[in-house]
Length: 99
Image (cartoon, rainbow, N blue to C red; front, side, top):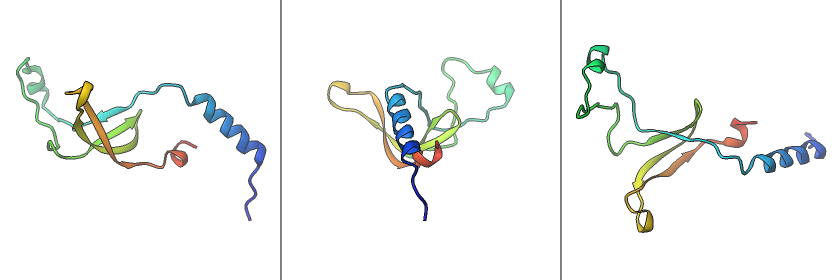
């Protein structure tokens, strides 16, 4: 039987609470492109760069290089009308991934 060390548990809770208000940056990946260098050098302001995904395909959310979730792009309504958002459809187990 595994016994929980209450001191270690309390220390983890305390550390989590300390970090709870630290902002982090999440990158949303909508796709990748693999142009040739020749094509890259010819790109201009009206160039269309095809991606490896479709408009309705899921997007991926990363913290650094770690995939943390997948979701679908949405457009907000109301006072934030026109702003992009992501509706999460799958979230990684962040407790085990970052412990």
